Amino acid sequence: MRQTWRWFGPRDLVSIDDVRQAGAVGVVSALHHVPTGAVWTPDEIARRQAEIGTMKDGTPSTLTWDVVESLPVSEDIKKQKGDWRAHLDAYRASLRHLAAAGIEVICYNFMPVLDWTRTDLAWKRPSGATCMRFDLTDFAAFDLFILARPGASEDYDEALQAAAEARFRAMSEADRDQLAGNVVFGLPGAAERFTLEDVRAHLAEYSGISEDRLRGHMIDFLSEVVPLAEELGLRLCCHPDDPPVPLLGLPRIMSTEAHYAAVMRAVDSPANGLTLCSGSLGARADNDLPGMMDRLGDRVHFLHLRNVTRETGAVFGSFHEAEHLGGDTDMVALVEAALREEARRRASGRADWSIPFRPDHGQDILDDLGRRAQPGYPSIGRLKGLAELRGIIAALEPRIAV
View 1: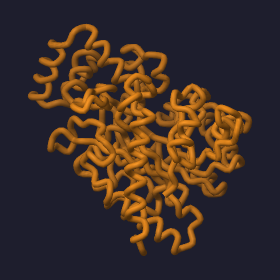
View 2: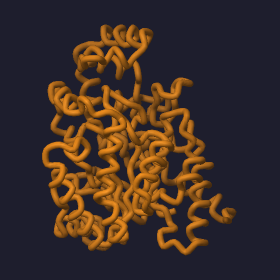
View 3: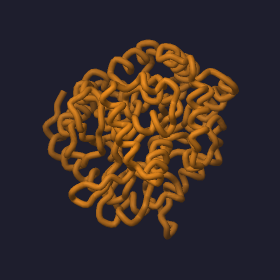
View 4: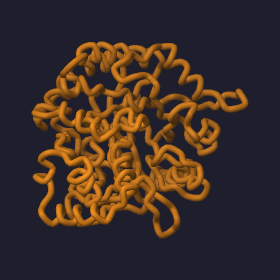
């Protein structure tokens, strides 16, 4: 399993020197400054590769850009509106340029409007660490009483509506503003601080787009780009919905094993695969992560290894980001399943037998607490997670056989 680390570019408070010292051998990155729908040019790709390959003192880092996360799919493509055909052309051009640069694994997602959603970005744990959290009551309070989305009451039972109203009434104005800011943080371009009117406008654009229709749009997108990806030797891998349930009346189509299986059957190519994110998928109690790795493993092109603790026994409810070995997903069993898949690939002669993974998210601990890095991406918290995962691999790998 190839150890990688997500890096957000030169403005990331975690430096390439830090990544190198953490022991990663590859980097997961993207051209975040390039507008969605625009072409990733060879010059911009080469610039990012050079940044990854160079330490602060100018010496080589030995790190390589192994995985693109993400080459974003525009909202126009998801809705099949506006400039979506031009965006498809740009996407194909970007794939060609990435292939020419030697980058083979491209992660993307097909979540409408929301990229990921949390209600608290720094929830304090008994240890003093902080983590990200999704509180279903807080989210319902936002949806029902802050956003005041038409029809929102249809999505929550009476008990949850009552709890959400009580929670909302107990909040100060500052609390309400903070909650709204946390929820919209995962919107595309959220650094610009979307207003509630912006959110409402985004949601209105999806009026009439059902789950089946959105899935059809995704299959259309893949039908357009997967043949080229296969020709170029690229591996596309879709990240699951986060959280893996419908939110704000929006359809979610990549939340379960059945969702992935349907899309991979519809566009049946080794280039059409998945990013198995144990944190996103693990937020649903009915997702079997080790089993998914066993059954879908030949199409798993990238692994996000993180853990969440589900706070209720429901299929979906509140959850928080746990330590990598401390949540509800059996991380040892999942890593063992990934190592079995690698052994199968080696035995069959696959060139892509080594699956890149990264320690996804992490709790803010020690010096992380004052650094104010990208939420979910602390340096020391992820280093701790990587060390724990590295230990699992070292213990299991010698015993794995096909």
